[in-house]
Image 1 (cartoon, rainbow, N blue to C red):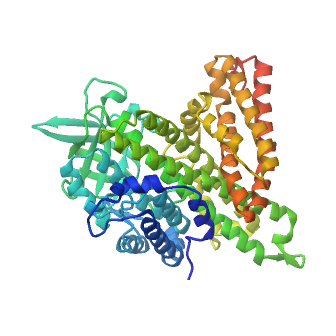
Image 2 (image 1 turned 90 degrees about the horizontal axis):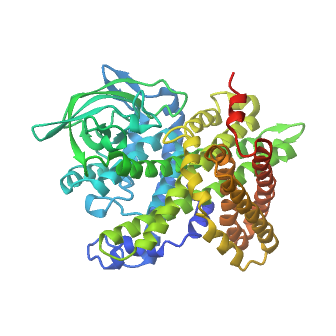
Image 3 (image 1 turned 180 degrees about the horizontal axis):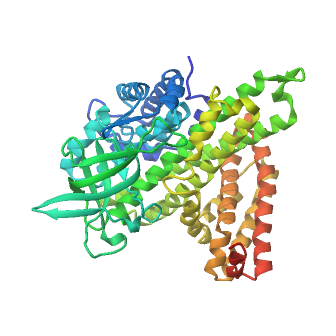
Length: 566
């Protein structure tokens, strides 16, 4: 039987030590409920069973329906949005398998999984049908409700999510407020002790869902983020929100993207007033960005698999095209990007788990301030770095998969045509690649990875010793380049070279993550060496690009920008 939870995914998962995280999640194994876990071994067995089950469902049930979902798309009639039948069946099967409430506490019907384990489930769902992930993955709004909602809100809503009875959306974007959410104008009006929402939201993924978290301006006359609060809107309790239209999209056809009109729709405040953007949306978006990273990873895996299959089956000039160096080189390059990105995404998930662990410990009164500060800095840096890396890689991998298929790849008869369309949105929504650069560059300039470089220097490697030395030389070059840029104290220069520095950081950090795997697993050494050799050339190019910019413009790039304005 086909199963997406394969040896490769297991290898990268096993490289992460989840023991401390799981022990915390399971209350030091002191819970006495019938479904409680009592050891890390028991937890590992359960996680493997869940992942095996999810992997089989994705491979054998969801993936065969993906083409039909894409071709039919969602329907819209008289304000009513309908998923296609195949999507409805997929969601029912996932719910029946108990996978809908992955990281939610068991008391609400959830699985109480680490984020790391749930990320792999999201990745596998995305490999099977990327559009389904947008519905399944929006369980993240339930996590936000679990973190910041009232007990009454949690008890009312979360069991419905876990049972698969409802789906959700996060209603943030407006016609004039996309990346700049401080510009949100939808009003939240307090009247007779109740809150009402009035205005328009646009580009809302699954806006037809039964539950929405809505960012709205609650403080009249107060501009910017401080005037925004978060609200819980439930369609089954109020009918004063209408879906005005759904978008006719390039890809992800199984997921409806809606324009919503709130007409004094009754809603409830989530958490505290004025914290909607600065606290709750940031938490929500970090979760969404990690989910999109997993989505891109799944799409990339699907595209790579199709490319490998086609290259082995398609014969030209008397032999399979996989044997042509130009094609083989493309495939090994795709695999190197894919697997190094997988380890980055899994590591990011791990640090999100660490952050949540210390946040909960702090709430319980434990003195973990320093640990919490470090965990937050690392998670807040790796989340945009992951999205920057894998969403761009997924687009390139899907592009190359189409190229390997040649003319066939341009035809709807082959899955890569759909995958190339589905990949395109991943580096746009939940924050474009350019916004991920803005989010990541601060950590780079302040040395967020210094402790990792120190660990790299102390690794006792045998097979990878010579590569370790070369990698450390690249790290030294990277550090010197950061110092060079910082010396000018010029914000325009920093902004201009930020993309180069973030790509450099991603390349070197992924090599750092992969070198231990290559040391321990012989079957990964050739792939890692290819990735390192390619990374070395690219890293040296990026450093020279930065140095040339500084040399030519003396650290002042205002004139450079004007040169390209016609």
